[in-house]
Length: 418
Ligand code: FES
Ligand SMILES: [Fe+2]
Image (cartoon, rainbow, N blue to C red):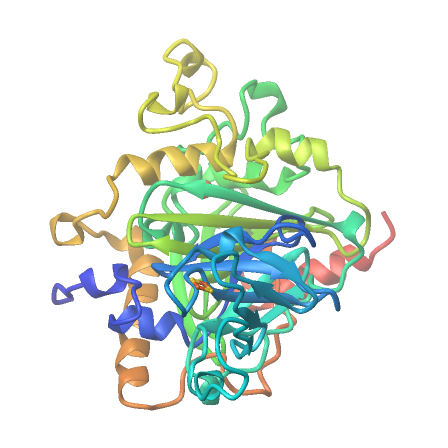
């Protein structure tokens, strides 16, 4: 495979090809819990400075942070009805970006018609405020992910700050092999490995650190699978990943286990938020166990953990006799290694192997999507007929069955009486 230049994939500003591609999709802008009636909250997304606020009618507005008059920050504004009133000279900016009032101007001022604030549409679903930062006339359908309408007791969205380019994080979701190493002990305490979060199926992973990886295109992005040998040659262990453009993933989970969806929010080129959405359509989640196992319990306003590059992610050499990484919690283990690469890793210096097949496939899909977007061609996931009834599965199946049958076999198994 010729070396490709991946550097374009890491730049997210409005004037960049990747920035333009990401602006063709709905992206998490904030947690619902952050956007209260009282105070507008600052949002940095794709290099843009914005504020989010909740109007009287409950809708969330997302507007440029700086007032179009003389650029005072609207994070100080009064939240009045369904608009923000700038504190400096009283301009009132609506959800749509229209300027409803300019009280210091003459009543018939033409400025009201000619000036508009930056304003983006939002949708609220699954505990997350989603936004679309692209051209108005090209707004795609909102992706109806299957977890969006679950009862809040069945759903745990988690937002976590990460001090590196978003793509380093995304690529971790496409890297089936790292779990054999980095996450070898899901949490400190080998006896308890994988148990608290109920992900028992992960244990089968340790039988084979060198899975066969396969990828295929789908109407919404890509599907990949890691296929591992089992001690019994009549069986194989299949883990499938469903990937929705531009960077969402359904991570594999086994029969009767809670499920996981991953989403991203590039803040700028060198920092991002990762969103974990844990969910279980069948039963309420054990939230404490999930926070414990993943280590990602965070809180507003910054959603940062105490694990940083500056403190070497509190890695404990002592713990490494019991825990492979010396870092507690799978989410923190990912955070540590992805941040350890630096703010934007230099992909021209990498050595990709066959175990990186899904990562390489994703990069090519994104490069192709950039080209298609620049040329005005159709993009993955934009057809209104796309079916988002997806899940990532993690299932031991007979060795002679195709991996594509893993989901059906897992769901058949789940329907059997326990
Ligand atoms: S700067 Fe906002 S009204 Fe003047
Ligand atoms: Fe991981």
